[in-house]
Image (tube, rainbow, N blue to C red; front, side, top):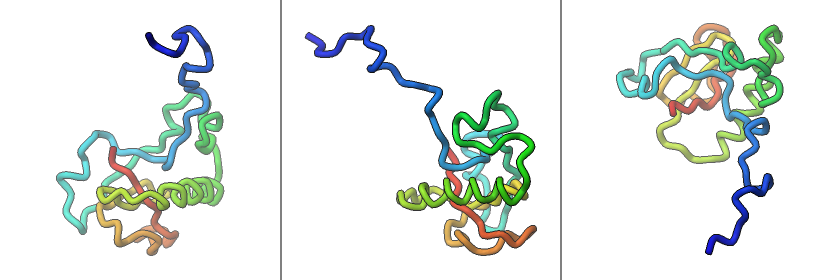
Length: 121
């Protein structure tokens, strides 16, 4: 017999509390598989499609670049605490990503901000 009541609200996933470990994504899953180490790919801000981005830890759609970067940097620190060999790096302000994790916290080639950890899946 199943020890939990299926109808108990405490057992249900509370989707309004789901958070992210980065604020951008790429257009398609597996985009990293076709990239060479010197390639950069365009990323898309997750808050562009979210009706209420702040409720899930994303910056609002009209947040200034410095504040957006600050939020992304905090999320990256969380992601950096987990070893994920397939991760790469990205700039949440310039919206670009690269497959080389060795570039983590080095300057973005466009704006000079430190690159942050980026998950491809």
